[in-house]
Image (cartoon, rainbow, N blue to C red; front, top):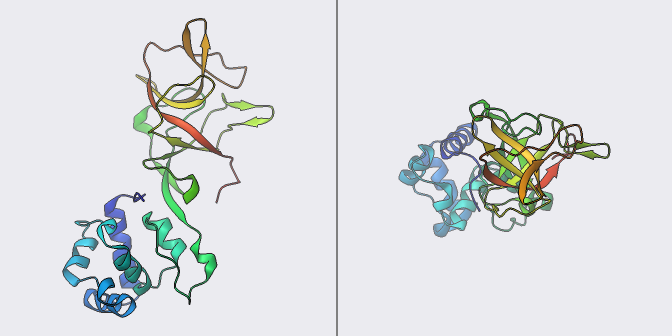
Length: 231
């Protein structure tokens, strides 16, 4: 599974968890051996590199990842949400409810369903806990700001979040995409064909379709998370 937060953030979080337990690096390494035996032991030099962001957690074997998680007294759900790494099966002493697999993905206010905003205005505004079944490698979570994709039945409204798959770039009529329009920024639109041309169409009839001279597909919207109904 892909790590869902920058490596430097994971490194800081890992160091904070160790300090919260009141452990030195050597003590934590000894605990990994207690929980995972020799197969789960994380050496002090390697732990030091993890905390400096010089090594990725994903480079550890699953046994060492699990031993480190248990040594830090972290639940399966928190480990997955913070690191994006699939854990091993729960230890018999752990609550089965903690096995819910979530991936922590940053939310950016880059998408607008109205007038596209400048790309430079995008920033991380929150984090979304995405169920593993809905997670895709490199996915984006964007919060919509305009109303051009709203409908009487609901549609995509301001404040809603959309999951975007940047690996799905094949244009298909009727699907919703996030596109970058030079000089304008990012926008969320449905692809429609009128005559022999593809247009960026809005679901809200008050907003006319767009036909920019140039546009780059960022990815296809494959999941819509209405405001107030997210994890």
